[in-house]
Length: 113
Image (cartoon, rainbow, N blue to C red; front, side, top):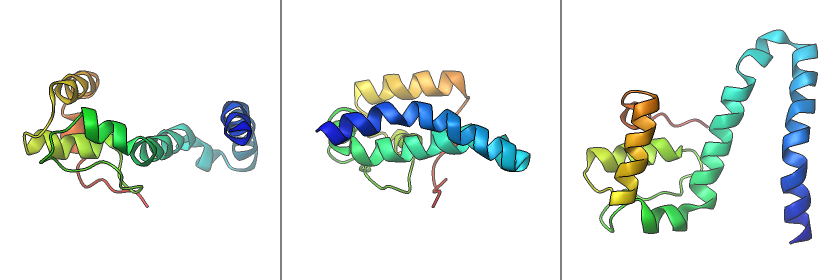
């Protein structure tokens, strides 16, 4: 458990230090740095919290969370399409789609390896 807390607390400061190193070494790579990091965190969240998401955001018949190469939005989009979202899932999709029109459906099959 101690290692978990050490890793968690180092993530944010190391992210900014790494960004500065990337920026210093290659401005081209720095351009998409935060978007790429956000997608990686999203994929991690899909895998790490799969039990929570499967229990709260989709019906039993819905497409399952947990594929490490898929974002949470992609799974939400598939469940939106298949009409297998729970009430909580529908609220989350509404929020995401308000920020970015059709965000979840646009994320379907947007697998990133």
